[in-house]
Length: 139
Image (cartoon, rainbow, N blue to C red; front, side, top):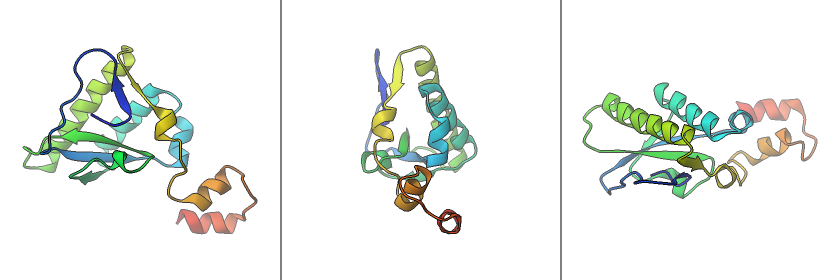
């Protein structure tokens, strides 16, 4: 089960050592639109469909913020099978969230600065920074 997603009633998602993990990361621009659990899980589903994620043997969300990891069984021989498995689990999470049986701890997920600290400070207007520096950081 993802570190940031809590199932309130009923069984959660089994985690076995054989799982691979699909890791979805977020940026400051993404964060602006992810104000609700429903918006966040829909964004995760969209990222999985677009195959914009990283695959690892361990969940990245246990070690870093601004990332949610979805477990996938290792029994899939193709990436398409793993994507379908992750998509099915994300849809299940979405159903649980919409029915009020699950929640995402967005405060913990987004409590630290993302990895590009200078860009984050510029976007939050913490100190003045020129647009040329911002354009350099975005590239």
